[in-house]
Image 1 (tube, rainbow, N blue to C red):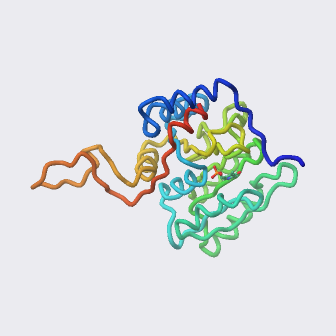
Image 2 (cartoon, rainbow, N blue to C red):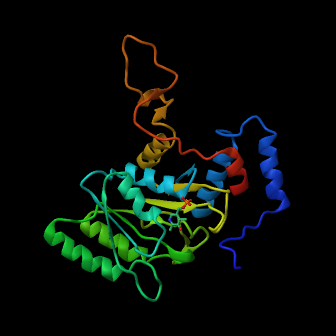
Image 3 (cartoon, rainbow, N blue to C red):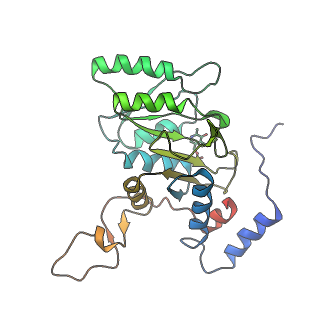
Length: 255
Ligand SMILES: *Cc1c(COP(=O)(O)O)cnc(C)c1O
């Protein structure tokens, strides 16, 4: 039988995970920011946040871009279910843009045609999620140009494309999108056991996704709702978020 996936784990990987197990922090320790920094530096983006899966990453990316009831999100029909489920989690509807038969990626020409039709009926998408299939980037410059023309946001589903390049630059640098998502499931390019990451160059999006990753709780006094008669709490829940954090055990393997 041909296995669905087969990961490569070195002795150094096992040592890195064992080191975390012997340390003070199994989660919310130094391995998570270490992994985030290494990916952000490698890709040349401004901000990266590690989460427990790419599915979670896609969910908080959609939320940060304000996807909600009545919105439409478009993606590729040749992808994993999570690329469309993230829109459904937010109460939005999903539609699909056909692929280019040469690359199997979302066709920028089909997207242009579909946008032209959608404009007539007032059903333009809020977000488009191109999927870089098997490491090959979509035509991001063309998709980005259309986003400016029609006013939608872009999440690159780069779940199988960390290490890939577009026009000589790393996928994930965010030159042509708002947010990029990576997966670290064992069948993807590199693995953390399970895990995902969001990358962005927008400080506000980064802040919002960071909040959503960890229960909507902040410990930054500037973001807290003032309570004049009380002392400021050490932390405050200011939004409804999730527990989508990556553990240090996973981050050490990823790193
Ligand atoms: C694997 C995959 C996902 C989901 O990744 P998980 O980390 O397993 O949640 C999303 N989109 C695409 C294109 C994928 O291949």
